[in-house]
Length: 279
Length: 328
View (cartoon, each protein chain N blue to C red):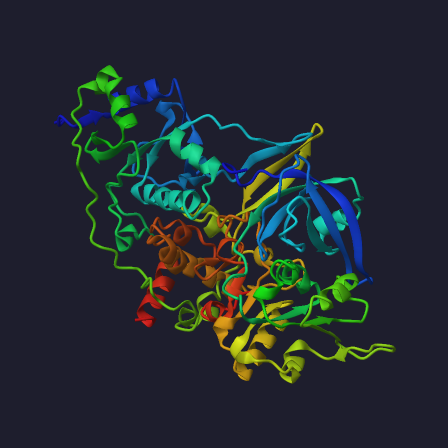
């Protein structure tokens, strides 16, 4: 692995959690453990490459806490060939992984500040390692208020809902859920993050915003935050690109001089705004 | 009359005969009406001034290569392939390999497959006598007669070649053959070419260069066939493909092209470069600006292949020049 970054190792699926289950959004979280008993030492924001032999390989952001290194999680939406096959696997089956790759969120730099997480749909998955890290008892005092604005198309499309109560109990944590259109029985917010964020009472001088979602959501939400007065160097996002190799060679995730797989996937908005908007 | 640092064509063939005992020899050969790199015996190699259709990059980065096989418990790395002696590589292509080495071996991760071939292959360079239609290596600061990125460099000198060894292996190879052992190589020759006239300022703002010319107009004739990327000595984008045979599933690395819409297509259907002119702009700016920002090299060596062989008559030199002019 060290000498050859293209060689994957085997990992066992220990557990599968069905997150959402509509025809348009079928999402499962896979709890994995390396077959050789080794640890996966990753940082929030990093990703790995997952292979199903004969089917192919895709990049996935880690979605679990970086503090539990013996096991790690990936959250996968059934979309194409690899994710389609992935969804047919069962607990006890094996997959192949290589990584971790990419940079991470600047955890230490953000200490002492409030955190605002804005996620669209499955965009919460790559933010969850940071959320779980910041809310962990050993780190909770390092960060101020933690606000989350979590968007999904419909009421049934939010991920990790089984954890929200636990997150709220960590103190000074606010979770707001929103959906695109009102539906019967929905008690949360209705609308898009770039509109709703304007209604939040935020101390902009002590805030870092961390965004992930569809590119259109990221672009719109960061525009709102900047119009509200949050400087671009206090807004972070993590990008999805077609990252084949993960090591800055294959050219697929190239944007300007940067490669999302090695220079990202985490970007500060002040850096992203200097890059061509090819994401 | 032969100089002391010259070898005759016959002696060169003898040198290749000896080296060919340990390595497969590849070089320019006639394939139908075109000249291309192929495996050949020394007497089948073209020793004239013709330029191959494709670049020799495939001896370092094959069009399709097996990287590994999925075993029962571990991924089994493909063993190193047998080395090649690559004969007759032109200075532009040698500079192209220098750029590929920079891209594959630096930047935090080193590509083991490319690295092994760099270590094991043996290159004999061959200077050009005349500039061919479409060539513009001189604009990129490349000496068409000489490059030191090889083991032995030959410069045609009438019926013989001026010879220079540029590595310990190159020197040892010459010394091991009776006919060339006495050749005193003119060590110390450096490439002589005027500084590059065609380049983009490496501090140029990426977004600004998106607007300095009309990229839609520049890319209008492009059909998106991607042939430019396949024959280019510096294009290096790739994709992985799995294939099974006899119950063993292997992973292959295959050339890909930034000119194809699927290259950047997300699983969601979103495509960051969905329009053809965006993909063409990526090819030009990646070569002339992005690689330059990261490594200092312009990733175009002026070999002229994409100019000569584009079915739509696209000319990267003209487009790069217009970007350079407009961005001043």
